[in-house]
Image 1 (cartoon, one colour):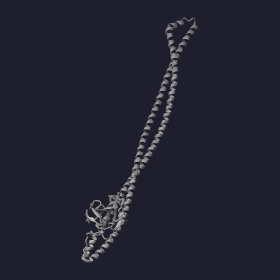
Image 2 (spheres, helix red, strand yellow):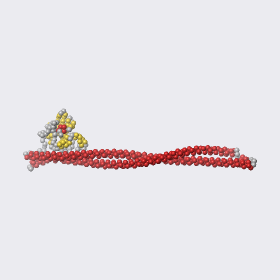
Image 3 (cartoon, rainbow, N blue to C red):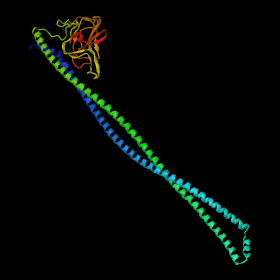
Image 4 (cartoon, rainbow, N blue to C red):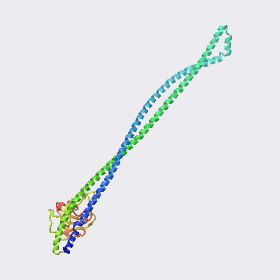
Length: 433
């Protein structure tokens, strides 16, 4: 093989999409795998948190059960104390009734005592005033005979004896009254003291029950909060699983796209090598710069537009899970995966031909008014070295650049947009399926 042939073959390999495109695609698959691994790691972390919340719920349930058991025990104590208190109240009522009866007896006995006291006082006054010692001696001396004397002595003895019995009975009755008062008061004090003890015990049980009720309420609140947190974690885990599945689907789609690109690139490479060999036979020097003349082989659709590049449709217009941000976003155009030249879909005037962070190297062509609406097309992610400039008029099929992967791109392709009066529409309505 001659030097010119070797140089031409080397140039073809350097310009081939196989050289740079698959590296970006491999990087894209690696990024998707990294995203998937990160989601799986986060899902594992969340599962650990879910397990912790589940254990906390079991602990709270056990704590609630224990507290409810204590409440039941305290309620039993409270019921017993209430029974004792009711019995003690009855006992106090009986003592009060007994006190009333005893007081009536004391009052009656006091009347008798008062009567005796009055009688003794009367007899004492009589002896002191009307029957002094001298008079009594006179009574004895004035007796007519012994029988009369004995009779008078007997009367005096009876009076003295009766007075003595009255005094002794009086003292006994007064002592009985005092003893009864003391006994009843002591019994009443003891019953009231026991009643107070029962009231204190009852109050303490009620207070303990109130404390446990508060603890149960706190446990229930913590249980509900923990259950809410667990449900939130489970929802997050489900969302992560959905994202992981979506990324797996994207990876499968990307792998399929890479395989299709590889097949297309291999076919293009074979064709390029064959063309280079034919050119080398005529001693022509290969040129890496693309032509800027209009393409002579393209199919015009019913809309009057042509497909701007060769390749297959890889991602349609509409909402999708963005391979760049991972969010659900509007895909503004139609992606055409492949390689090679990009041509103007319709004749018009170039409005923009520059670089953008998302679009990379891109071109906007204004096609003027078509069917009453202003139509513009946009071509993005091209290689550096655009073939047109703003203000330039281009014809349909004229090459404006080369398919690349600049800007926010995951592989070599053309991002193609169509605007009607500034609003986005599905490009397939212009370039067909």
